[in-house]
Every structure is written in C-alpha cells, then in structure tokens.
Amino acid sequence: MSNETKELKEQLLISSKKKIHRLSDEELAKADEFCEPYKDFLNKARTEREAVTEALAMAKENGFKEYNPDITYSAGDKVYIVNRNKAIGLAVIGRTGTSEGVLLSIAHIDSPRIDLKPNPLYEKDSLALFKTHYYGGIKKYQWTTIPLALHGRVCKTDGTYVDISIGDDESDPCFCISDILPHLGQEQAQKKLGQAFTGEDLNCLIGSRPYSDEEGEQVRLNTMKLIYDKYGFTENDFLSAELSLVPACKSRDVGFDRSMIGSYGHDDRVCAYTALMAIIDAGVPEKTCITYLTDKEETGSDGNTGMQSDFLRYFIYDMAKSEGQEGYRVLSKSKCLSADVNAAVDPTYASCFESKNCSYLNEGVVISKYTGARGKSGTSDASAEYMGEIRTMLESNDIIWQVGELGRVDLGGGGTIAKYVANMNVDVVDLGVPVLSMHAPFEIVAKVDVYMAYLAFLHFFVG
Ligand code: MN
Ligand code: MN
Image (cartoon, rainbow, N blue to C red; front, side):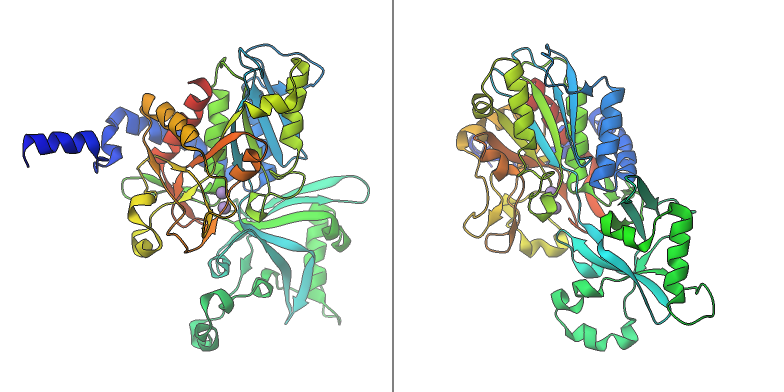
C-alpha cells in the first residue's frame, strides 16, 4: 500500500484496530481494581430491594443525606431519595442548580428471576415444592438443575415484616427446579425449545421429610413448620410477600486472564453500580447530576417503582421549585444517559448479529442510538445532535466506546427505559456495557467495559 493510500485510509475510514490496544497496562490494572468492589456489590444486591439497600449504604457512607423538599440546597450538596425500597435517586447539586437542566444517568436494578406465586406451597409425591411465576424474559431451561437462593420480604398482618435471604452462604441449604433425565426425555426432546419447558413446569423443590406418619400432607406441614420456626410466618403470609428465587452462585472471574466477570444480575446492576460510583465521585458539578436506579424494567417499566412512574419527575419538580424554577422547563433542558446493557457478539451465535453494527467485549461502552424491534418500533431514537454531543464527550476523555444495535434487523429486538425518559422531553441515548449470555443465570461482562462505563457516566456528569 502506498503511503498516500495509507494516509487517506487513516483520514477517512474507521480504524479496524482493536480498541483495547489503546489502553496502557496501568489503565488495564485500574479497570481490574475497579471491578473488585463491583463483584461484592453483585453478591449482596440479588434483588432490587437489596440493590437499594446497598446503594443507600454507599450513599450514606459518602455523605449523601435524605432529600427534603423544604430545604434549598447549594452547590456540592449530596442528597438521596428512596421510592418504596425498590428505586433510589442520588443527586449532587450543581453550581447552576437545576436552572440549565439536570444530567441523568438511569439504570435498572431488577433482573430476570423466578418469583414465588402468592400461594406457592404444595406437596406432591411426598415432596414439598413452590409454584413459581417467572419475572422478565428468561430461557426457562437455563433455570433448572442449578442451585437457587430465596430472597425477599414477607409482610405479616401485625404490621411487621421479615426479610429472607437463604441459599447464598455455602452453609445454607439451597433450592432447585428439577428436570427430566435424558433417558426419559425423548418426548421433551421432540418439542421446540420454547415449548419444552412451560411456566408451570418451573416448580421448585424445597423439602422431602414428613412431619409425622399420620395421614395428610406431612411434608408440606413439616416444611411450613421449619419456615415458621425460623421466620415466624404462616402459609397465609405468603399472600403478602415478595419472594424470589435467584441463582445461588457468587460472581467469579472468568478466563485464564481473569479479564471477565461471570455473575447473576449484570443486567443491569453493572450500569447501576458504575452510575452509582460516578455520582459518588462527581465532586461539585456544573449542573445538578442525578443517578437514578429504577425497578420493573424487565417487565416493561410499569408500576409505581418503574420508569413509567412519576416518582423521578416529582423529585425533579421539587428540586426545581425550591430553586424557583418550573419543573417542566428544567426537564426540557435536561439530558440523560439511559444506562443499560447491550448484547455482545457471541462467536458461537454470530449469525444473530450484523458485524459492523454490534458490540464486542473489550471494545468499550456501547452506545445504542435506538433499540426496539423491526422498523424501530417501541424505541427512542436519539438525535444526530445528541449522538454528536455524547461522542465528543467520550472522545475528549479518551473513553473507548463502540456503537451497537441489539442484534440483526428483524431478528427480535428489545427495549430499555430510554423512551420513557425521552417522553418527558429529555435528550436521551442508551449507553452501557456489552454482555454475553444476557438474562441467563450467569451473565458475562469484560472488566475493561465496566470501567469504561464508569468513566462515561463520570465525565457525562463532570465534563
Ligand atoms: Mn437491561
Ligand atoms: Mn434485561
């Protein structure tokens, strides 16, 4: 190739050089170091409630105080607000307050899982089991024959509640959804994958010993007695409980090079954690910055703790009002990173992706101009202007980044919270971490991408 051709190529075409080569050994080491507390966060935050508990503890440790709408705050003040123990906002007041709009990084802290039905306990063939109702989009077979832990809250009629967390500690018992052995699985094997396991097949084994040799469901009775002795609630109390089965597996380094993390719940606690660290490290920003961690994304963002709730809007309106601003004007000048994961290319399933417009592990944070399905339905399509702004922010801070659609056109699709924020007249684009095996009990991310997400949220806040 002549020098002239080479120069012209460098000037005009996107470089095919792998982006990870831009990082020095020190930067790689920083990425690895950043991910150690993230792994701990994942091990503690198994549900959205527990993610709020962890985020709240981190907020308090770093000087955030509970938000009071009657106080006028000044630059550098740090506040938090919690919605029903399932969503949390952390704000740092900027030098211009809300007058020039606010900067939002929003991630979701709910993850796909197996919830218990309101009346879950039953006995069959002398085994005690829970009936379940899965939450979010799962490939059902992935959730059978793996150890499961039980997490959640049971509210009793006397106004008290009990929090449950059993199965994660190695000395705890765990629970399991069984599957038929291959020898007897011929009929199942003939079925299509999506039909071979039904929702009603996801029954979870929780006990096998009878209470006594008398007639009646003695295993059910024995199981309920053990639950009552330990937690003090009866079978009726399941009706006012939220109990979820999640994989009983701690986060682990993956690969000989330890470059990746395998864990339950990267979607979307990886963006939640990085956005949380960014607001904690935001110092005194120009504009007021908010990291908001929301619930219910995996089921469509409906409900009072989901992104379609007015909770965040009211919070921003309150801040605006205390500064003599109109809430809707503040929103109209605000900007948002919808912090969510995207599907990384899996070499084994490469045909699901279009190689020039998808994300890869170790290529940095992924910007998705739009998500949606088919002809871009059900999405917020970020404007060229806003894409340009975010691109400039990333490049001027040497943050490695890539663009990615969610798979091949017409293959499937998906949505994020971006459209609900956009509907409030806020500029928004999806930015997050590429993930392998998304929605599986053990998802995989690359440490470099996690660190780049943190830097992206931080520089979005501080410039
Ligand atoms: Mn997500
Ligand atoms: Mn998801």
